[in-house]
Image 1 (cartoon, rainbow, N blue to C red):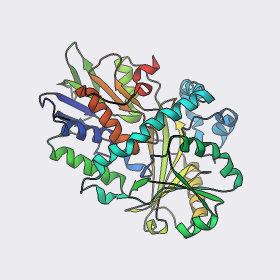
Image 2: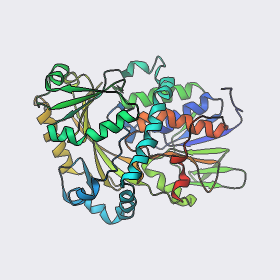
Image 3: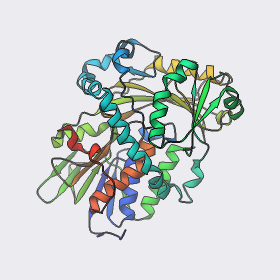
Image 4: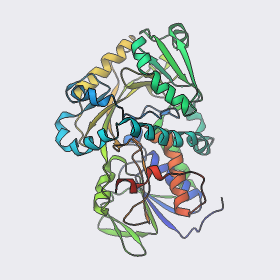
Length: 416
């Protein structure tokens, strides 16, 4: 692909993994890119993930089972999927749209759409991750899902069959094979699923920072300012920061859970919801396991990282406030101790905000209001996995490259 006109000025708002990778790919293509964020690159939501490149994660949180689970989701404290009851009224319109996307036919469509992205994700990731400054952060021990008992395992059979239908390769392990693979697990699991050809990063923050450094080395510009508004006229678009309007040819919004602030001002009624995700860090415990281990019944991963063992995950549908659910933290501590009983108290706790759409699909493409403003957000649990592919898609849209993939399922137009 040939270089583009370097006079094309592009602004990317949001320096998480999505915005940083998108900026790098655009700059590498020969465009002049300025990345904006009022926080350091990778220091917010992208900092706290489980570190997995989950090329197998085509099963959304949308499910027919949700209808029977609603009372537990609202009132329960020990479920991997729950609703922040204090934000229930605020979340209600989003929940109605979410439930509409939990019908069988719609869930099948979502799985096929996610599957189509995940099939292309490894090739896009390799373009980024093979860089010699980044590759040492990538580990190729495959992710393992574990199941408590026969019911837990059999309830997941349908999901695993759907994964296989998408071309995802699985290896079933029995209790002894799990113990041989991960001998430090105190809890005995009935079965395990090893996701072939999956991989992870030992340091999500450092990964984003390395990609950011490559962006700067390629001539990119970073401006640490809060963007307050977006404007557009017939032939230009602008960002306002510190009472100053800065003009560009194109703008990419990679602002995650905070995108509604901008989409509402643009007149794009995108039904963006927010999930609160949590993690615990256990310093000096990374050696206890060799790979990401997803505990199916609990909805979280345990991942060995540079700075310790990270326990990350669960879904708490709520709001973008910074209120921490202490009961969820306590529950995660308790369950982590059951799985590895040699763990001490966590060295740190964290909560972040994931952007989530009612259909669990990202938003990729130009604003219905202005074709020079692009959205790249809403990846829910797959931001790390799909960052490179999403950046590639937005890049190709901006430079009007010929592509062989269909991204209509992810268009902002789907909400009109």
